[in-house]
Image (cartoon, rainbow, N blue to C red; front, side):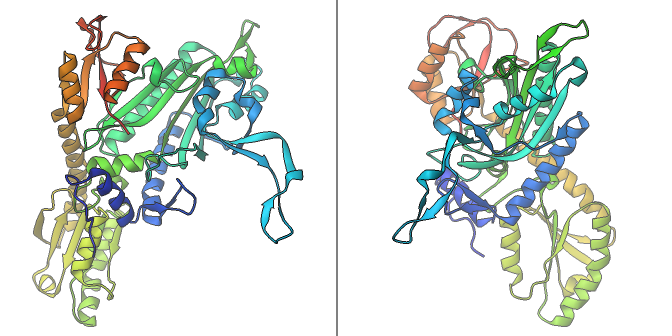
Length: 489
């Protein structure tokens, strides 16, 4: 079984690309910048979807679906929004093909659309045009809608899962009667994302707000969760936006209050995407392959029989059958890899590469002794245990592995988080990577100059950041709080 050829130390970027492909998560497609998500990768995404969908519904949201195509005129209604996405939009201009005189397929010039359609880069415009029809009175509010969909942003430099022309995501869009309700919604969804990241992805995240330069196009405030990858770069893992009344103004969405007054609606939007798959790979995996948190692993336990004869395989299968039944009864996903086309060593390497949290190996000698070899993927430790009652031990082991993967990522972040006070210190640390807490004077101009000089951006203004008098690392002007800088994906 071929393993990942490139080590993280040798070439982190190549290691990531190799791993995504060799672990059967995804591959590049015939369409430039677009990917095929393979069954194993999609199974992980389905687990993420399932957990998040439940969390959304527990906070009162419902799923709906809105059109893929958006009239171009909709984008011109909210100036900052269209400015933010204009360079990434794919445009549909015609609705028919034809065969020319040489038998080639060409665009039918007579089938030009009266108005071009944009393939959705995000759905605020089409959804707020819809909400205008749904909302008349305070009785119609709040509207708490989520959509699972694909979007297109015509990226020039792409990387599987992290940045592709088309990607999968969910986008929440909510409408509220008051400013405070909308802000509370945006903050609630940030906490939902942080909960998911830490308790399922096993990924510690910083919660904060974006600087004006980094805000979502059309937002008043963008809340974010930021994670640190093993190469010291930051990854934005989820965002939640307070949109104020910008889209309500643009699409004339008003409601009659209890006091019989006409007022504009307040809005939020929030989303996470298949970029979380990239985070999962980069935060936890090693040079042997994926390391998957048990809560998101499609296969949590794999059982590999060691046999030479068919009767040995049959005996092992009979022995593990009740164990498989018990594990499944506990909600643990199990695979009995009884293929006779591959040797045990190949299977060990394959499941190691695919990040299965627990591997059991059992052969004729184990049958005689009533034992089984247990290997855990996160630490690569092995142990020989009695097969009797092992279902409870495996259940506890999966809990331990989940916690250990999170703790390892947490410790890595702690060891790669730095306070710096001077420009020279800052420049040196940016080259090394990590989260850098530094003072900033609060101006967009300074932020842009720091980015131009170092390629580092403000990833987050911490929500729980303490007030601390200081001087901006670049200008020396007064600052009241440190913000988090890093180079990012």
